[in-house]
Length: 444
Image 1: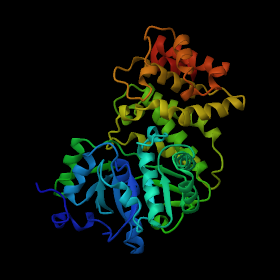
Image 2: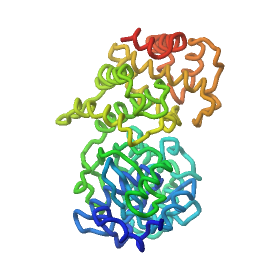
Image 3: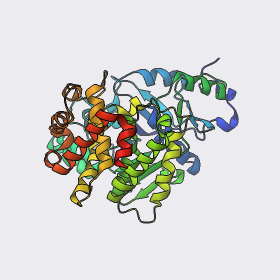
Image 4: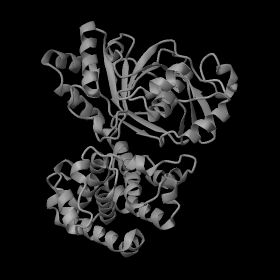
């Protein structure tokens, strides 16, 4: 079967061909993985199709591997997206940079007006050689070229992602560059929501059957998609609102909602269910009931500022999204880097419930599940893996004491909270003694 490309696009059914063909590159995206290709790139293509403004082609940059470049370059950067039963080739990506390519040249080009990022939580650190350092090098080149204002949008699952990114950039800027950034660059916050599992060979085979051509860049996702962006742009931009994005003055309420309800539930599934895929975990009615109690009792009470938004409907939608068997979302993918995800997903809401005099027992159970997971996992994918592994035979109290002492995860406050420590210890003791079903029965 021939490979997808512009030369073979005529073999694809007209209804599945790209909605737009950009004539210029106006967006640079750092971290062109599956999520970006199923989310921001789709919004950008739809915005161009809705307005006829075709200046917003995307230059995607891979930071750690040539894999995406190797897959997309032979395809003229075309790839298919399957969302439920709908399949379409996306054409908004014009160029893919591999590690070592001249990213600064693209960041300093006058036609580049927007930079978006999906680099994962672990990449947000003060590292001159890392992604943030490369972004700063690009800003330095842009300032030297007097190439105009730039909007830089973090699309990662971090609370206050815009402010976090701005602070890291500022830390790496010398005073003249910092002054230029303050005048010419904005860092809006954003919240993204779409479940995008890692692509499997079965997904690639299915895409080939649907398109009639081989597509090594294909991604599979769900029909649901959401993008909320702080309306604080430095200059020109794609009309993303025409594609369904929501531009707001304050992203934080939406950010907390998604991080805590969807991502928090995902973490609970990863560390407690024992399933290989998310859909398998939620097929158990007892476990599904636990997730709803987690959302209703411990997480929803920490959310505010969502006037006019139907929070109950959002929560009601999550089980169906999780249960989608077509996604085959691997639990191991969610479980990775838990030390970087747990604070904003579960520990921050635990703090808020404790401060109000409540006992967040369902959060405590999820945290106990994480402790059990990191202590017993044979192949732990986490930047703090060496500090997380411990004696599997240690008693629950010793494990809780050891792990809660890691300040990068639990802060300086939670280890001293006797209520939370007791809740987590009790949950871990129950898990060790009788497993999850017995623990859920005892706590319910």
